[in-house]
Image 1 (cartoon, rainbow, N blue to C red):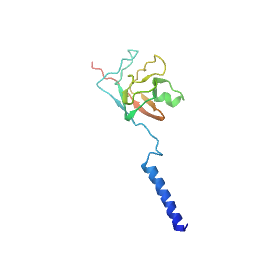
Image 2: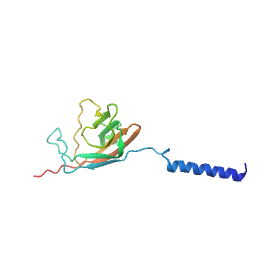
Image 3: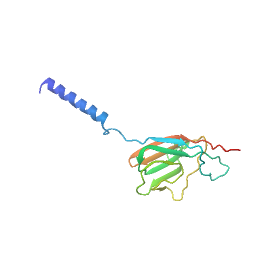
Image 4: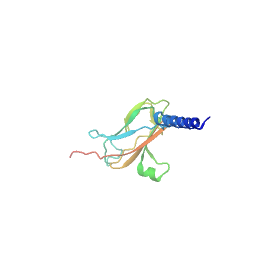
Length: 154
């Protein structure tokens, strides 16, 4: 092979590699985009302790429908200081969860159950930062969110 033939072959291989990397999903890790939204106008479930302030519900939507296998909410502060933070809400898939595009904190998700039997979601506190961690098979994603205190008319 001549020097021009070798150079042309190398250029072709490099261009093919760039094409595969840029225009296919072969090397891209799939992620779930999570959008957390505070829902004013609706009241979240009452906290266990009636002295505890209430917050507006928080909903989470995704960039597509996913078969969730794990949903977990923890305090961001607890996550920063502990390797295994206490879950405020932890759901796991029974076998096959129903593909979902979103859910509201504390409400049931079809095909999922509490990781610990009869565990209920802990009430969220106002102006506290939390972390939602989800898994859908091999895909892991998480997002931070803040709650807002429920404004009660006097």
